[in-house]
Length: 186
Image (cartoon, rainbow, N blue to C red):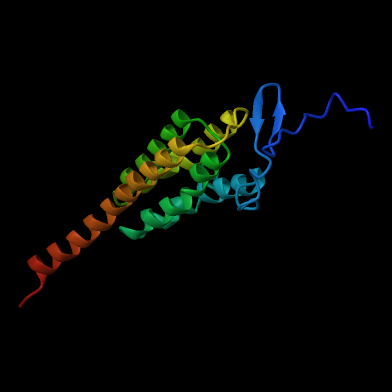
């Protein structure tokens, strides 16, 4: 019989490794591993918030600020791209409080960003994806298994974010009807 190595964590019957009282799931990265890697998420954060420098300044902006210039739908598309980081954080076991902060950052970015031009300037300065990536990195030291409460929280979070994304679309459609009603000669 081989001598057990004291540096290797023992494997429990459920297939999880036990390390100093913490359960680490063995299949955590089996689904969508390439999308939720640190390197991929960092590249996404840079692309959305920091890809392009403003000459002669320390400021940088990403495609989030550029896509946001498209009235109504631009902020929704940028918001959907921004959802990858909070979903990756949830998958990786970031605590609820941090996920709520990430959702608020994302909501602020989408709602304020839907204001033409000024909202895009706010998005460039606020950098919600950079903030969310930093929150995720700060809390990755505390992964945990997901329970039904995690799934309920994610469902509530998705429903709230869908509501936040529909507001700019509704305002855009309403403004089209308003313009059509007030300025089109019949």
